[in-house]
Image (tube, rainbow, N blue to C red; front, side, top):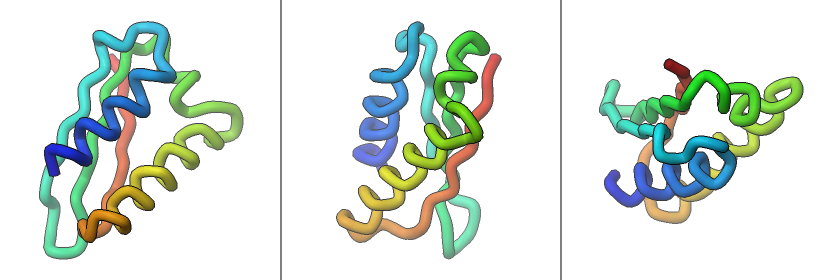
Length: 82
């Protein structure tokens, strides 16, 4: 799971204006899925969500593809700001 967190941090930090404030945590919710919690600064929230949610949808797709290639279980991605 450490690789998944670092991969997600790389993706999100490359999009943010304040990459030092990005935090990604991984939680096991049940047997079927892992929850990734992405926390960004409120000024970067619009960038991460994107117009009509297209950016976060693309990020979720990349994370799920990464998991599929590495044999991990399903991942749910949540985004929040502070």
